[in-house]
Image 1 (tube, rainbow, N blue to C red):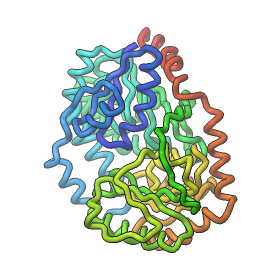
Image 2: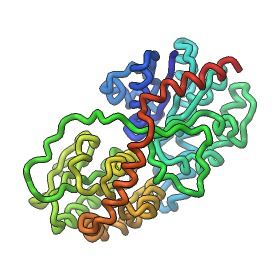
Image 3: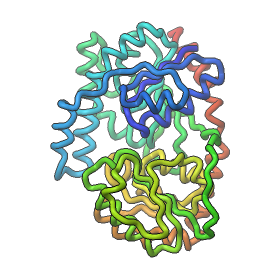
Image 4: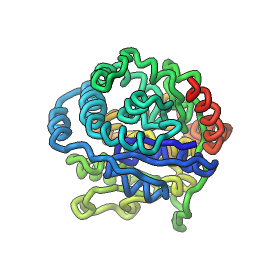
Length: 385
């Protein structure tokens, strides 16, 4: 069994696919990642084979992102998924994806749901395709009507039949490690969806001997590159200075020297393996990125979410609805509530109990290693058809 994984760049896109690639490889499958060059270090660092695709041209992407100022979250999301993900990024990746598929001859393609070159190449070459979720299914439900015209324009150039209602995507397998509690109850996830739990492969982490509860704070890998991040950082550490806890704050690519001093109870690091921190954390403060939110609740750790963009406001609302944490307003407004919210989740055991229930539900799921057998059962009839 040969599986091609396709993804956009970025830890939030590549990361959720990696456990499935390892599981398939351990089961004897041959796997290969095709992704922009920007993702190469992340994929090869995970010990997986990688075929580089061109990075999307900045001269096409940058004007789109520069035009987003003053738009609502909904308007921003539409423009990004339609013009960047299904537009610039797909045009950039599609020729190389077609070539690698013709050479590699995969039995199936598993893709990041926001990566469409793998979908189109699979349709063009008659290869079964599926999705590995990088976020709640509600986001794909929202985005598919937005990108459908752009995808059909690509299909027309490839000589493919249109799919204006996305039936071919909807029928494809959907694999996820996202807890069901974080799915919106009004969203109908695919009946053929497969939900798994990740293996516990966390590297060692020394939490120190400080008796105060540990709060893990992170705003992901994208937010620290934003020009407003120094203000977000300052508001966060100032709010946490007076919380009776010690704080581990990871800042990714942000320039530490430009962020200013931090209080005694805050330790700043560029990056730490989140899975290693979660067993020691009493609470997580984050932006509502799918990876961090999912990992925290799967570990039974209550969450405070200050959302910024993309699926983050939806994740904040779901955290609030589960009772496993507090969803604050989008920043900058939500930053003012950080201190009180972190104190509440530390002091009120109801948040911890709700997070523990999510963790219990996740623990009852089959391990991601079971995905290999499920995919074999899917591929054989799909190839025959």
